[in-house]
Image 1 (cartoon, helix red, strand yellow):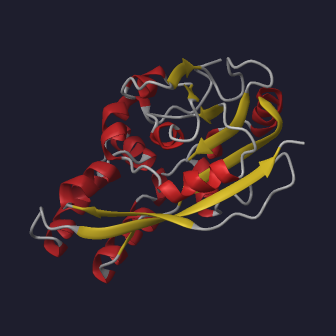
Image 2 (cartoon, rainbow, N blue to C red):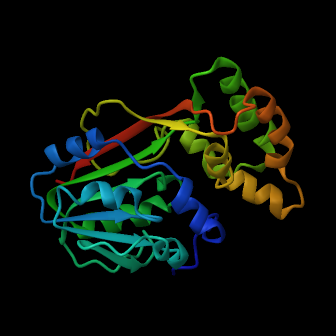
Length: 250
């Protein structure tokens, strides 16, 4: 059922679309090089389509599915991307209809035995399954990096959903249905001003949960962030390490 999933992001769908980073072109180059055919790709739990847009240069048809219609609604209509509201574990795709199935920053929310049955049904033999995510935001400036790391690890510790632990383990504790192939390392790099960083932090599931309980850790962080970063428009270099698991369907 579309509603039977942990929906942490529908209420911030517009902010999610505006502030969540997209992925490096090198990742999609690698995915395309390891996918034998390129007719159709499935971006499962697509959110507002960061991965879908990255897949378009390589696949003439991309099907973006998500159990949260509000997130799909934040994806700008784009030729070649078909939007379908459905759960990862019960998607609306036909048997053997896709060459690549990928999950970007969402596999930690899934019921894995059911999802693996579904991806085995939808993926053509020889097709590629790839799941990836990004780790904790890091800043090039050491003082800013310490502040953000402490905010993530200490201030927000009571508010992170249990599934967040899979991000910290780089998905190595999640099951994978088929033998895996070796994957390279990638990372997302950005230069952000202070407001952009605050906008991104505001999309975190822990912030949403704290605010629902009547607390606002982000407001408490703002003075320390402003002290380190007095000129709001000055750019700061930030990055996220990407982790990737992939394997071919027998």
